[in-house]
Image 1 (cartoon, rainbow, N blue to C red):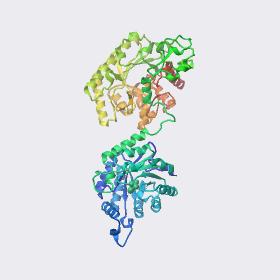
Image 2 (image 1 turned 30 degrees about the vertical axis):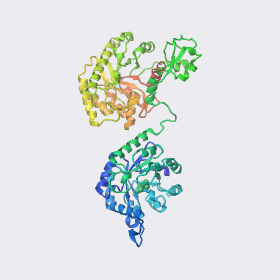
Image 3 (image 1 turned 45 degrees about the vertical axis):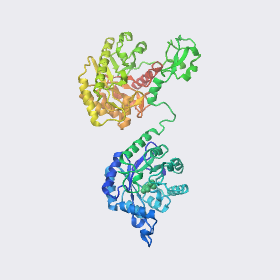
Image 4 (image 1 turned 45 degrees about the horizontal axis):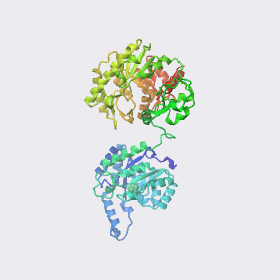
Length: 633
Ligand SMILES: C=C(OP(=O)(O)O)C(=O)O
């Protein structure tokens, strides 16, 4: 039963920390200030706001000597609290204000009369302050509300905490426990965050109620297992009142939420065992080393250790696999510098089995491997993937005429001086260089046309730009980018070629790091941009799947919208938000449902764009084509 702890439908968990903005008494008795703090909490990204409520008539003991008979400390706290307490009517008005704000509402009743007041408040959850952890009477009354409750464990002995948890488990209501040090502010060295895992031994929902200065310790609490973070919020730490000095000001609270959300993303294990992530895969390719031929090896010759060496890049077998190759016969003519690949170990080269496919098909090629492909397959098209250096090469040295029905060129993303193509850059100079680079791509594509005399078109797949470094841009800015894109392409002469912008995923990889894509990503915007500019698109299904996963869109629904404005497809599966270019059938896309939708557009063309498809003599491409061929049959 306790495993079902949730507040307003949110279940605090690793990867989804629940953040409470504790307004407590920091409103200083002003309803206006309290409302302002609710607004600030919402803007800062909190899940919930919390208040405290006291019934002074019943909270303190009654003595013949009245307040004067209390110790000095107690007298001071009593005076201060009485000064800042809101009336029940004001609390009720606040509760309604919080409901309107969209935030969840919690409150700490400090006495049994206040619990009864809250019974009429529709609280989302309720809390027992540390000061009441060793007061089973109030805890029992709080549980009688039947709402999820939270117990804070500051100022307690360990045996009292264990006792309170054991008691709470008998009350029949889901609850959470918070580690806490009840000093305002709490000295860093007294916080002892390592008690969080000990609390986790007692109960399965553990959080942290922090009173320290700054945000680092609360963020670290998340890394140690806290799934609820509560911090006091104030407009000004210098105000009079017991909690202000231990509170965060608006900017700090926003940074706290940002930090917590970052740790939420970073903390959970994403798979059962450690494997290179998507960004690391790219860097492993470019930066690591692999086994290559030190010298030419004749087909059939037995491979010796001296035939092999280890060198960058990391596109062949990993260096530790070198010994496995020694003593095996070479299954092919191996040239000096060739990567040694899985097929060399397995003793067989993967092959394409011809299938009748309902749309035009092809493979991605570089200049240097084009001729090798023409010896093996007869596709409807080739898609040339150029680097910026390739743009200056004469195709004569690499290409022979073929009778393909279509020519496709993928514009380089990266140009001289590490500049990514960005036709909508805010920087005028950068934008102009991108336009000039686009013109180079057009010229290179025109130079390939004579080798494709039957081609119905020469399509240029282009990632047009519009990315940002640290965060997505606003909707207004996106509109500005689209307008700029329209202006830019209207001025470019595309000759006999056709620009087909490619849809991008929300988090594209550039230079081995993650960026944010802003335009040519949302399906509705893609359709609108295509229609407004009389363009067709290159639709990358892996990118579309990641976009749909991120925004919660239905893949098939979005695909159906996009196909009528599509000329060419990049076909690969995807997993979640970051698993790009996954083998077909191993990701999120339901190919049995999707393939008939695509087959209804026979003028479409595609290439398989599975990750590392070209390796192992195109093994990944053939696997994808064979998969689709079987679906089509
Ligand atoms: C004082 C409170 O909590 P903590 O003990 O977590 O600071 C409270 O919620 O009112």
